[in-house]
Image (cartoon, rainbow, N blue to C red; front, top):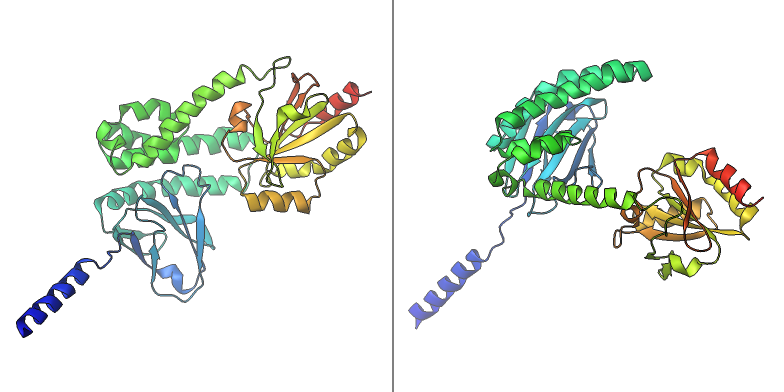
Length: 364
């Protein structure tokens, strides 16, 4: 009997041990000289977030000797930046894979990343970029149009070319797809097709998927842009208004409607608000404004509407449908005037006096 109880207890203990959760999130142990005296900023985002829109920041006050950053999830790699607020032009850039145990030591000028081969190779590329970054930082202090065109952009291109050379020479290397996500632009069309399927389907697959989604959107954008012309039928859509109710563009048929594509993050959008309010008051009996907020969280959108006391109708473009893609929006703000019959009467990109001149001419 005792033997049976002991066996059961041992079996239960073994079962419990087997069920202990394993931490498969990536861990990054940081020990940098600057941590003693500088405020350190740690930024991170999924590698699929090519424009760093989901970037999250952690701040370390001076005095720490060591800090461990833990990835938010354990399903995809994270891009992690480490910089000092006093030396933002120098940074450690790493990729943290699920289950990684990386170690960063040294200082921001001369650091070492250990833990996997990917980051050892990546740090060589990142360090080779430092002279270009330093030159661009120096040029930024005396920037004018001539310096931008003749010195700044060529330096940037040289840095991108350094990464592009690595990609050309290593089409079967996961690091190549990651580096391509850093240089982006026309390089994607040139270099993405040269990478192997092994790389596209490997650990960097989220980047490949983001590229392919971007190419799909570009194709749709080009097709839609042909339709967003004066005299064409304005595509209908339905989005949630600020009270959470459905609002269809077609419900406003019978009056002039201004679609105002904007965002709280857009400096020119905010700068144009006083004139928008002035003209809304001037012609509100003859037109309606429908503000279409883009790239904001719901909280930031509602806060901006309240802060700036915007009296017109508002909806938020959450991406289903993506009205900015539907209307092939190239920049912010963009204002599209739709006539009472539902046809596009005017398209104005940017905060341009031509928009207000058009309204004065239209309603005189």
